[in-house]
Amino acid sequence: MFSLKRLFAFLLFPLFLAGCAKQECVPPSPEAPAANVPSAYEFAAEIYDWFDLTTMPLDESDARETPEGTYYRVNSAVYPELSSLSALRERVEAVFSPDIAEALFSLSPDHYRDIGGKLYALPGARGTNIYLLDKTVTAEPVDDAHWTVTLTFWADYTAYTQNIGPLGQLYHTPVATVGYSQRVLDYERQADGQWRFTSFCPSDALDLEADTVFTFTYDLDTFDNTDFDAYSDLQLVLYLLHADGAYAEAPSDLLYRRFIERPEDLLKLLTMLDTSPYSNAYPYVDAVTAGPGCHAAWLSLDEQAEFLAALDSCQPETEAEQAVLERMRTAYEDTREDAYYAPFCMVADGQYLTLGPQEGAFPWGHTLREVSRETGGGDGFGTVYTVDCGVLTLRYNATEESGEFLYLIDSSTPGVRTIAGVGVGDTEEGILAVYPTASFTPDWDGSCDAWVYPGDGEMLGCHIAFCVEDGQVVRIVMEHLPC
Image (cartoon, rainbow, N blue to C red):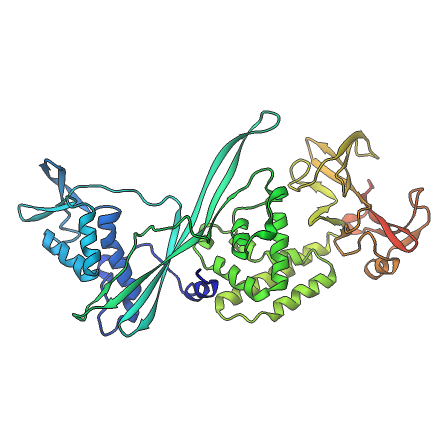
């Protein structure tokens, strides 16, 4: 199996093959191949494509009818040196070993032919691999007479399946194929002193069966049923390439935890993504690579310290790794500033809910499970909805003018905590260590004593009530009251 370590090594200086001017694509000299090996590959790939993928440029004004079909003369303005079949064969044999050269001419014996002493061709093209996004190429010396050229073919294709929802509504489910496969070509000095490719492959030879290519279906059950813990690191990162909203929550949390456990491994993997063609195709790759930093900013102070320690433990080996590390740190610092002004956020099962206006309709992009619902009046908020989500009870109202506004989050479930890290089961001492301005209120809601932390500034009218019994938090209520 191909190792990620090797992949990271040759992706440091990727060459994105967008084609090159013909005069620049010259075979390297036997004396100094190093500088020209990537260019020699492009030169050879163009020739290989004339047989496997397409046809040489043609002059359609010069046509010849034959029993095999209509031949057109190869455009002499583009390739004046390739005016005959023998000249074309000479070019092929100068670039490829005899077995490859013979195989190319055998692919379609009638593809090219001389007519009246000039080179003509039957037009034709098979079409490129629709799953291929791009390819990168690097070369490494084996010895004085042998180089290897490693091609990485990057997959990126999204299809949509049509589905009917439980209420008969039509919706489309995205199915994304991403990842990469590789081929290693041999470039060797022959007995006559010339360098030739002794192995080769088509220019779009993406292997969809490679164990580094994955297909993900982002349907309504994905975030409930997908066993992300069983994903490899590469699979997890590539899943996030097309995930958003609820589809990204659990895997983003897992990516963060894996970074904490193995920061240098994950840094290399995120750097691979950052230096791949995906970073050109999708600007939001930056958000994936910076993800652990954004995630850490919303955690407890102890967890943030753990993240910073993981950052500091990384020893980047390249400028590309250093850039990703700095992006992650900047994302943490910027998001932490935002988090400072959002203390009225509850964390449950890896999901973050903050009081106030919400985007979209319930459950606002989260994987909240509605157990029951009640409708009633609510303290100046008009008609409100009380929704039991199992671990949380929520109250919100909805209007056409302002959308949905969440004004109460209530939970007695162990593990549920505030954004600052105080959760059900913690002690009164723990409350005051994080919320020193909290005040004790006996019989707070008629059923329990509570430590109440008030909001100020934009959050004036909000509070967090930590209901306690025998010195422990048994319930947390976040509430936004009308002023």
